[in-house]
Image (cartoon, rainbow, N blue to C red; front, side):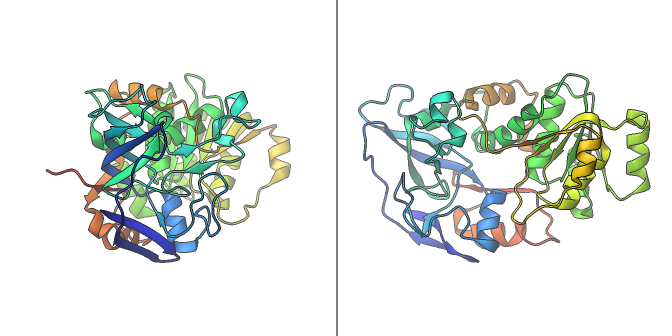
Amino acid sequence: MLAARYYGVRDIRIEEVSTPRLGAADDVLISVHYCGICGTDLHEYTDGPIVTCVEPHPATGATLPQTLGHEFSATVVEVGSSVTEVRVGDRVAVMPAIVCHSCYYCRRGLGHLCLRFAATGLSAETGGMADLAVVKDYQLAILPDEVSNLEGALIEPAAVAAYGVERAGLVGGDVVLVTGAGPIGILTAMYASAAGASTVIIAEPNENRAHLARGLDIGHVMNPASDEFSAMLEETTRGIGVDLAVECSGTSPGLATCLTNTRRRGSIVQTGLHTKTATLDAMALCEKDIALFGSWCYHITDWPRVIRLVASGKYPVSKVVTEVIPLADVVTQGFDVLVNPKGDQLKILMGTEKT
């Protein structure tokens, strides 16, 4: 079968690989429908290896080259002897985290902080940028009829966005600032709105991304350096500042925008991943008595809940998708387009479904 295999910086190859097979009683073989290209994948492409493994991973034994893809939907093809929660033919969304279930954090319900954490598509034998993959039964959540296969491939980034908003303690009626209009920023704005925010403001200095975000009609989208941005915040919050800010750009300017515009005793959550050391005005953090939260992945049990919200229509995750491409073109029409600062795409999915 075909798979997109990561070897190193700017080196992803579409190769023929052996068909994966069940190796344990709790394994499940799945046929991929759609798989998203994530910001983490892009960081690996331009700056890696970062989380992909040069040395064998202690939990999975995986090492480069790595089949990429950790945001995907699929149909169950074969199940191991102990699998009872999914059946052949079920449509599923994949929760990619691979955890030990026995370390300090796993035993406290914090599997996303597992000391032996690995991930399908980043540090495992298989990934979603392929025709088939093998995962554990606990990694699968069944999709109801109301959720399409395309939406199923967006449950993972939707869960990232949801966890970030919840980490900072959104309360109904809050005014929320989101810095960065990439896919996670857009999904964060959507989730904040669905969870009860009265107003969502997205700060995005890149006009190409801002233009894409405005077309989705999910909140005010403004350049944080503009007078209009300051005027909007002044009018909306009466000069007090936003209740909650979610930093999704992974940049120091984005974090500074959050700190400047969050009210005293407000909250900031860092959802975007930084590949370089960030700078922060710690004095302002203290003077304003602001709570600053980190956000890593999601609760690994969140999939059914997020899927229900998507099924209800209140979390329209498919809006972020701007292109679907075949696996064979995932580098030229996917990765290369998304790392281009002048690119005109927001979220690109690899699709193996026959249309």
